[in-house]
Every structure is written in structure tokens, then in C-alpha cells.
Amino acid sequence: MKRGAKNEPIMIDSGRFRKMNPVKKPLLQYLPLVVFVVVVVILGYNVPRFLTLGNMINIMRQSTALSLMTIGVTVVMITGGIDLSIPSVMALGGIIGSMYMREAGNPVIGSLIMVVICTSLGAINGYAVAYLKMVPFVVTLSMMYIVTGISVWLTRDVSVAGLPASFLDGVMSSVVGFPLIVIVMLAIGVFVYIMMRKSIYGRWLYAVGSNTEVASWFGIPHIKIIFRSYIFSGFFAGLAAIVTTARLASASATMGSEGIVLNVIGAAVVGGVSIYGAAGNVLGAVAGAFFITMIGNIMNMMRISYYMTLFFTGVVIVAVIAFDTWRKNKGRS
Image (cartoon, rainbow, N blue to C red; front, side, top):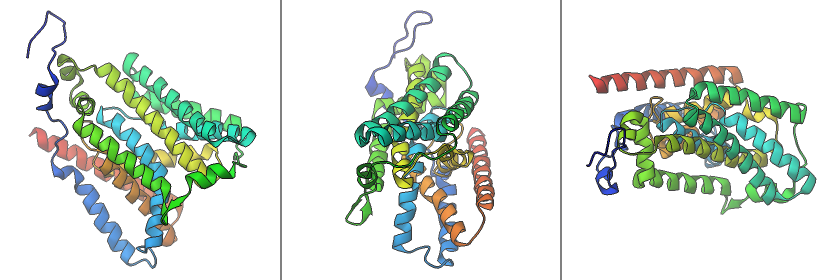
């Protein structure tokens, strides 16, 4: 390692940096997910038809959009940030893309509009956080309310329906009885997982989340890394918009309600992603999204109200965050 002049960043070669593996974390971080799986299986065993193949496929289909948003927010959280706006951004992208498809009928361009809108809003979040040094919580919370207001104004609180059948049938098609969107989501999740474990860029994400100042000493472009993480989050909000509008056959402002934010963050932390950054991976987050969806499914089968489901989900998230804090403090001692 060579030091440059004063205030000049420390540069290291990629081979030497590979020895700094911030991805490796103790298996203790996945304990909440394991406990959660056991509890859900025990509960599900006592609920008729819950553990059937058909219901499991239905849960996977329902969890696809949540999984995509969770992948996006996981990358942001690994850098030490947070994105509360991702469901609202998803809803706005879905509304604008659906409005275009309803008039023009082109599903490809409509889908691209959803992705472009959401990615652009993610870039705005990223610029405010990375370059303007604004607090991620404040920035993304403000964006959530801004885009929610725009969504309600555009739709007058009425769902955008009448989407072309080619869009609905294409996105919701199946391969040998298995939903295509689930296959694509899993393929994307595996790709992102490999990228974050094997590429220098992936290691930079963990390094920035571990200690931004130290990462800058090693010549890591931490500002660009943070900026791009929010763009990444916005892009996955766009993918989730495509899936959600196709599954519901419509788009509305309620697609990005506050309860969805709870599910996205909850899925990430249950899947082992630390709120303090530099810990977790997207496959764990996808598993977390699946089991968060399971909560809603099993409580629906047990005829428990939606508000009690929110209550239980909130309790789970607080418990996991408390465990994450304990684990972090234990690691320091």
C-alpha cells in the first residue's frame, strides 16, 4: 500500500483489496430468520391448506414484488442508508406506465416508462443523500409523501384499469405451472448476490457501509457508491411496479401505502440485513420477503384482521432490530 500526498486518497490494487472481505459475517445474524421459519411452519401445520403446494406457489407469486423492492433496499441498507420511498415510487411509476398503456396499448414502452420513472426518482434520492449530504431518512420520507401526493393527484384516487391483455398475460404467464415472475425474480436475486460477493463493486458496498471514512482512505469512491445504490433501489422499484400492476390488473396510489414500507424494511431485517450497514445479502432478504408474505397469508387464513397483521409484523421488526443491536454491541465487546 502506498500513501500519496496530503489529502490524497490511499489507493490499493484490486488483488490486495480482495483480501479485505467485508461480506463474511457470523451466522448469528440469520438466527431471527431461522426462528421465524420454525414458528411459521408450526403455525402453518395447524392451519388447513396452508402448507399445500398451491398455496406456497401463490405466496411466492404474491411475494415477488416485495422481494424485488427488498433487493433494492438491501443494497441501500448495506451502505448504511435507508429508502422509505421505494413503495411510493413503485406506485407512481406503475400509475404513469399504466396510463400510457391504457391510451397507447404498448406494454413494452409502458414497462420501460415504469422503470425509467422509478430509477429517476431513485437518482434524486441518491443525489440528495450522496452529494448534498442530506439525511437518508428525511430525504426518502419526504420523497414518499411527495410521490404519494402526485399519485393521488394523477389518479384522483381512482385505480388506473383497462390495461392491455398482452401485458397482463405476458407478465403473469407460467412455465410448467410455475409463475414466470418468480423464476425471473429468483434469477435476478442470484445474479445480484453473486455480484455483491464476487465483484469489487460489491465489496465496496460493504466497505462503505462498514466505515465511510476508512473506505475513502482506501480510494473507494464512496459518494458514487451511495449515489448508485439509490439508483439501484429505484430501478428495482420499477421492476416491482411492472409485477404489481400486472398482478392487480390496475395501478393506484394505494399500492405504495405505509404498510408496504413496513413489509419491505421488515423483510430485509428478518433476512439478516443490518440497519447499521455492512451486513446481510439479497438472498436472505428475498427469503425474508417470502416469510413476511407468509405472515399475511397465514393470518388471513386464520381470519385475523389486517391491523393485527400490521401489529404483529411491527413487533417482529422491533424484535429483530433489538437483536441486531445486541449482536452489534456484543461484537464490540
